Image 1 (tube, one colour):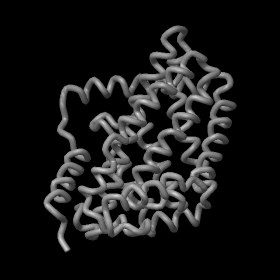
Image 2 (cartoon, helix red, strand yellow; image 1 turned 60 degrees about the horizontal axis):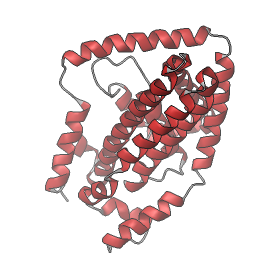
Image 3 (cartoon, one colour; image 1 turned 180 degrees about the vertical axis):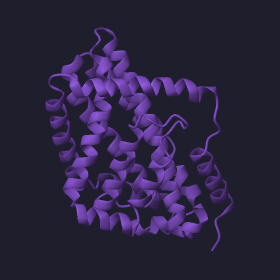
Image 4 (cartoon, one colour; image 1 turned 90 degrees about the vertical axis):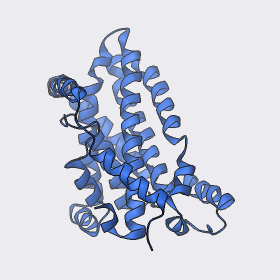
Length: 276
């Protein structure tokens, strides 16, 4: 079985997304990245930051446990597909669909989460430093749900340990600030995230322990986002900055999840060689 014309076009789009051309904007983004890296270094030295990170990690660990019991989107998505695709009777049937049908169902998902992120960031931005913990936990919860919804539409069970790690890894790598060459952190982060879905990744999770693996990723996300959120402590500007950062982060998470899960969908359907 070979990919359809639509799926071939999608594969080309994904490759272009992973390898965008360099432009003058890359140089400007490099300066912004340096600023965020400095903010993250500053965050490590501020009084109360360790307490902040610990509370963020605790909140994120609770989130990963809660998401495993959240089957609302799974059942709803199966019903949604079943209304238009008569061959869909259970979750595993999604993997046999043409990607065009999956993409049609994904329409509007990014806009929904980006708008929610902006509203949440503006609300907590007024609280300054005190609002960082609830803001980051809420932001990660929102984006974890976004990644989970992309995963589920593409037929991946977010309730499994490896899929929860995969989703968290997307959030972690999007929070990175060191990639000056690309709009989204793809290489080598892309390869590392992708490994989570393989047997090698599953074995690594088993050896490290799921809870420890999640805690490491959660702490990394907390530190990176705390550095970015420091600008919210500035009076008046806090709400605007908080909303802006949340929107930018969520937009990148949605774009990353959209492309990576669709690529995995096609790799599972036709074999890994189709994405090479």
